[in-house]
Length: 153
Image (cartoon, rainbow, N blue to C red; front, side, top):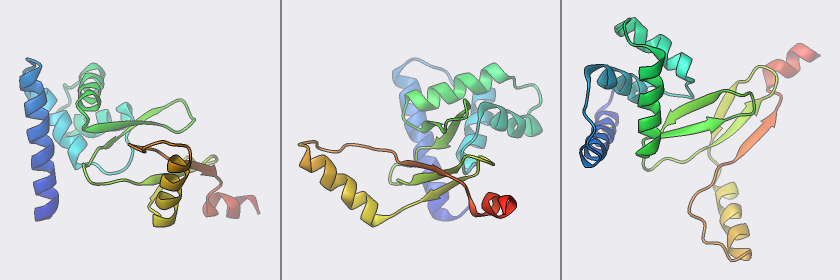
């Protein structure tokens, strides 16, 4: 992990510790393991995905611990819960200065993150046109990825 990424993770840890202190929550070793594995992840993890990763390091950690830890991270703004139409909740780290949108394949469920300045600008224009001050948004585009299109041909 590079110096910038380590600094970002340190900020996430500090925000979590502050939130837990304000809410009278204690930090357990199992919660720390789950949190560290989540902060080190990239992409969009289901509870089961994270549980599989965590159990490599600590086999005694159960589903309920991972579920409760992700719920805590979501509540304190350190995780985003995403729903991509397949009935599975997925989570990603809520980096403070990052925003991206998603392309989701309806065949293989591949998720591609992307950023586009033109789309960002257009969303702000549309919001302003309707008198909205945009505070957050999410864009999910569903389609068939190139690999699945090739399989269909």
